Structure formats: C-alpha cells, structure tokens
Image 1 (cartoon, helix red, strand yellow):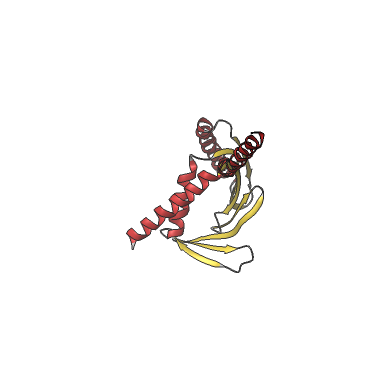
Image 2 (image 1 turned 90 degrees about the horizontal axis):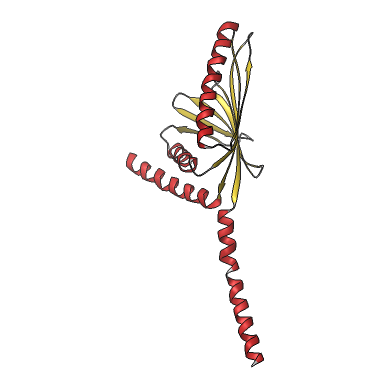
Length: 198
C-alpha cells in the first residue's frame, strides 16, 4: 500500500514538473524587454545616425541620408548601402511596426537635444523659443497619456554660425509577446500593401 502511494506521489510530482515548461514560456513572453533608440539628424546635410539597443546591447547601427524621395542606408562598416523609396515595402513595414507598438509600449524616458544657429542672433532666439514652446506642448500631451515617463529637452543656440542638428534619446519597455505580435502583424500588412501596389 505504501509502495503504491509512493508511486502515485512520484507520478503526480513528475506530471507537475511538466507544467513548468508552459509556465516558463508564459513568463518569458510576459517579461518586459527594454529598448533604447538614439537618433541624430543634421538637417543641412540631410543625414543622420540611428542606433538601437536591447538591454543596453547594440543591435542596429547605421547611417542614413535623405535624397529627394529616397532614404540611403549605410551600416557601421560601410559595407552595405541601400536606397529605399518612401513607398518601399521596408518603409511600409517600419511605419506599420511603429503604429503597432505605439500603444503597447511603456515610455520610460525621452530626451530631445537640438543645436540651431541661423547666423542671426534675433532670428535664432525667436526660432529656438518657438521650438521650445512646441516641444513642451508635445511633452504635455505625452505626459497625459504616459504619466510615468521622464521627459527632457536641452537646447543650444548658436548665434554666430548656421547649423541645424537634432538628436533624440528614447527608452521604452514592452513584452516579448507584444513585440512578436507587432512584428507578425506588420509583416502581414506590409505584404498585403505590397501586393496591392504590384
């Protein structure tokens, strides 16, 4: 009798261990992923840099330039160069991906930097003041939707030279499930749109 009880207890224990696998998968899918993006853009040269990190590990880094209706991409080692139309499947995919994850992410912080100089002190100060007002209005709308986000703006006015440089540092968190769902849905939508345009 005790032997049978021991065997039953062992079987129940082994069956319980099998539940650890789906539990681990569910916890992994619900575990937040921390993404960080850094973007800088020089408006006078129509070029910039984008860098994306996951858990502070760099996964994407490339230079980009805008020429008329095309975006030209180069990787860090300049071994790959690609020109994309604004209506290309890749641009449609990234646009759809941004729409998908916008409401699923938790904004941790957003920092905007800009350096503007128009070779005229009065005009530069007026433009920088107007930009600050617009950015603060934008930050207010973000705070209404994401009250826990940390927002900052750092401005530099160059009164004796012409320069228009903008940079942003963004950090968000989202679950692996939301990321996988957004990637899948964006892929489907971009392929459907590509088929419609063909």
